[in-house]
Image 1 (cartoon, one colour):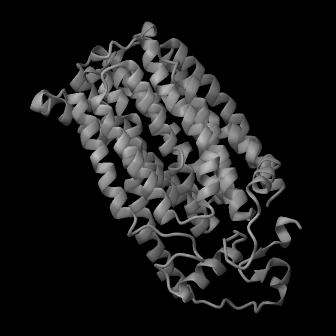
Image 2 (cartoon, helix red, strand yellow):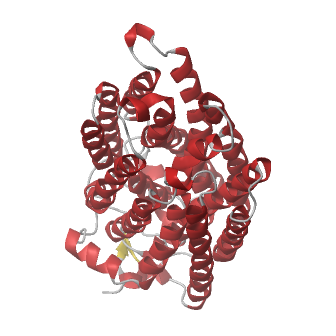
Image 3 (cartoon, helix red, strand yellow):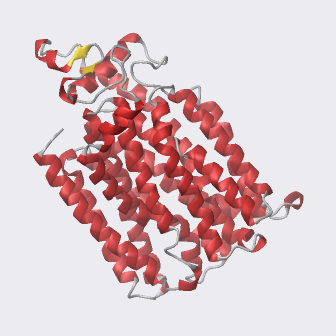
Amino acid sequence: MSFADEKIGDIPRHDEEHLSPELDFTPAEEKKLVRKIDLFLLPTIWLMYLLSYIDRTNIGNAKIAGLESDLQLSSGRYSIALVVFFITYVVFEVPSNMLLSKSRPSVYLPVIMILWGVTTCCMAAIQTYHQLVALRIIVGIFEAGFAPGVLLIISSWYKRSEQSKRFAVYISAAILSGAFGGLLAGAITSDLEGAHGIRGWRWLFIVEGAATIGWAIIAHFILLDFPATSPRLTDREKHIAIRRLQLDNVTAKTDHYPDPSHLRALQQALSSWRTWLFTFGYMVIVGSSTLSYFYPTLVKSLGYSANKAQYMTVPIYAVAFVCTAITGYFCDRIPKHRGLVISIWLSSSMICSIIVCCVYGHKARYVLLVLMTAGLWSTNALALSFASSTFGYMRQETRAVSLAFVNAMGNLAQIYGAYLFPMEDSPKYLMGFSVISAMCAFGVCVYLLIHILTRKYPA
C-alpha cells in the first residue's frame, strides 16, 4: 500500500472523493482550536527548549568563568567534552522518537527533562576532566529525545502553512537562551563567585539544572499529547484537529489503523530521497552553527574581559532572534519558496564568513559575526519547518524517524564542528571560518536542489 492510499483516522484517503465537499467544521471552530493548541504547546515547548539549550551550552560560559583553569582543560580536552555530548545525542535520537511515537509526550518529554536537569546539577560537583566527560555523555543521552520529539509534535498538530511561524517560535528559544544564557551566566558567575565556598561556574550548573527540573514538572500538566489521544481536548476538538490535517495531506495518528513496526518505519524513512537531501542540508546548517559554542571565546579574543565577553554575546543573539521571527512569519505566506529563502540566508552567512577571513579589525569582525549568526539561525528554523511540512505525507511513525534522522545527522556535524576553533588559531581563527564558508556554499547548492525537486515531485 502506498502512502497515498493509507488510512488516516477513520477516513481512508482513497475514499475521500465520497466525502461531502463541505467542511464538517467551521473556520471559527478551527481558529479557536489552533489558538488552544498554541496556548498549550508553544509556551511550554519554548521554555523547555530554552532550558535545554542553556543546559547544553552552559559549558562554554563555565569555561571562561574558571572551569578551564580549575580542571586544567586544554583546547583538545574541551573539544572532547563537547564532542562526547553529540555522540550520545546523535545515537539516541532515532530510538527515542520511535518510543515517543508510541507513548505520551506529556509524560515522556518531562521525564527525560528531569533526568538531564539532575545531571546538570551534578556537574557542579566535578573535580576532574574525566568526570566532566562522563556527565556530558549522560546529558547527551537524556537530551537526545527532546528536540526530535518537539519536531514530531509540531508536525503532528499543525498544517504545512502554519509550521514556519511555529518553528521560528521554537528556535527562538535556542536563540534567546544564548542571550539570556550570557546574561545569566555573567550574573551567576560574578555575583555567586565564592558563595558558600563554591565557585561561580559551579553555581551556574546548580541554578540552571534546578530551573530545568522545576519546569519539567510543570510541563507535565500542560503539554499536549497527539491529536487523537490528548486528554486536554474534547472529542469534537480531536475530530477537527485530525480532519484539518487530513485536508492538508498531513497524516495524523489515530487508534483506527495499525502502527508500522519500528523496522518498517526506519526502512520507509531511509528509502526516501527527501530524507537524505534534508539531512545533507541540515548538516551544513548545524555544523556551521557550532560557532555558537565559541561565541564567548571568539568575543573574548576581540579584547574583552571574561565577564564583558559574556554580555557582548547578547547582541549577537538579539539580531538573530529578530531575523528568525521575520523569516518565519513571511515564509508561511510563501511555503513553496522556503528552499530559496534558505539559500539566500546561507549565501549571506557565507559572504560574511569569507570577509571575516580577510578583515581583522575588532569592530568589523564583531559586526560580521552578528550578521553571520543571523543567517545561520534563520535557516535553522526554516529548514526544520521545510522538512516537517515535506514529510507530512508520511505516517506518524515514519515521520518521527525521518525527522529524528535529519536532526541526528545534523547534530553529527557538530562533532567535527567542535574542533573548528582551537585556541592555537586565536585570534584570527582562519580554519574555522574557512570551513564554515565552504559548508554554507554546499548548503546553498543542496537547498536549491531541494527547491527544484520538491516542486517537480510534490508529495
